[in-house]
Every structure is written in structure tokens, then in C-alpha cells.
Length: 96
Length: 208
View (cartoon, helix red, strand yellow):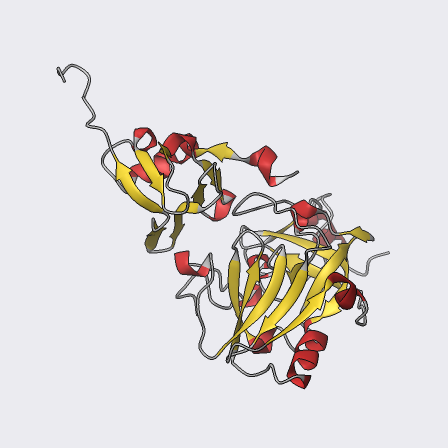
């Protein structure tokens, strides 16, 4: 089966990303260090399967974020993101 | 009929078992050929494809697809072992031995180093000791199971190093960089082992 048929988008990485940040990253905007395009993390293309998370730019396929959880360590290479803009999240029941 | 005692046969159950000693620790046998990828499947035409061995000093040896095909082919039958725990036995391949390529490169002065970094279309890399791709242990493989290697399994050509975990058998390979010191590749940077021997369960950095 081609890799494209198995590809999911960055929303599938939400759980793994929550280990890194207190905020929901899938609604954050990430600027690709390769081509300069800014997109929601949820729109990035996810690869890596059982080995780890690789989020790639849909425009230029650059790896924007790479993560793998191995015994004792979670390693993250975010060098493919030149800027991450995370909106303020409002909890249910509070006014913005 | 088996020379095993009746009781041992009965406890085995009906599921066919892999012959003893073929499946490394922590692995299970599959008859499938799962596809894992760190990125989209590259599409490189054979007219634009080449394979390069880059030396320590910047000199390189290069083969076009036709030049690679003109080298002696071998047809290894090997077991393969993925770090995600599946093993597939008796897979059949056709390719050129990495020894043949390294020897030809050495003939024009491209040699040396202790390790290699395999580099691929799409940007994937993986590092291995030079000793693990010499002495008949590795191929640049372009046919699998009697047919041209399909793109999702790494075609036109992939590295085949079956004695190590299969993430080292880099898909869509375009060359080897000789290294004076080891340098972690794509998954190794994120915690996977620099060597990856399945018989010693060298899955992750720090595994002995």
C-alpha cells in the first residue's frame, strides 16, 4: 500500500504533542523553515507510523517536526518549524 | 513423521511455527510485507537516477542506472527483521553487492572511513558501521520476489542489510557517504540504535 494511502494529518499527532506542550498544538500555526508557508499543525502530513511522528509540510514535504519516544527519552527535532504561533486557549466556563 | 515426543507436539498447537533460531528475540513472524515510511514515496525516473559513493575528501564515484545494472548481480535469500517487531523469512532479492561498489570506488581513490551514512531521495538517512556493509552482508537491491522493486518498498533501489534491523535497509537509496566518525541518521537522531543488531536487540540508543 503506498505511503500516501496510510498518511494521516497532524490531528492524529495531538496526543503525542500534548506530552510536549500544555496547550493543544493542532490549532497552532507553524511556519515551515523550508518554504516559509504557515499552516495549522493539524494540516501537516503525518508519517512515521510505529517508529515515531514525522510532520511534513504539505507544500514542500520538508520535515517540520520529528519526534520519537524510546526507553527513557522523548526526542524532538522541531528545526523544520521556524515559528510556532499558539493561540490562547479558553477553558469551558470562562469568558475570553 | 516428527521424531519429537507426542507431548511436545501437542503443546505446540496448530499454528505453524517458524523454524527454531530463525526469529530474533522479541520478534514475531509475518507473512505480510508491511510498509512503513517517514515520508511520501519518491518518484525518481531511471533516466535521472544515479548512485554515488562520496569519499572523505569530497571525491566521489558515481554510477548511472545502466552502469549499476552492468555490474554483477546477486540473488540473496534472506530473513528481514523490523524494529517494530515483525520478521519475514526467506525473502528473495536481486541486486549488486555493496562490496562490488566499494571496491570499484576504491579503485579510483574513493575509500576510507569507519562508518557510512546512506542517503536517499526524500532526505532519509541512516548510519552504519562500514564493517556491516562489507564481506557479503549488504546489497543495493532493485528486484524483490522476482519483480522490479515496487516504489512503496523502496524502488527503484534500496539498501539491503538483512542482518540489521530493517530501518537500516534504506529505501530510495541514492548513495553512501563515507564517514571518519559515526554520525546519526534520521531515526538514530531520535533515539534508535547506531548499529541495530536484532540478535542483540539493539533497538534504541543505549542498548548494549
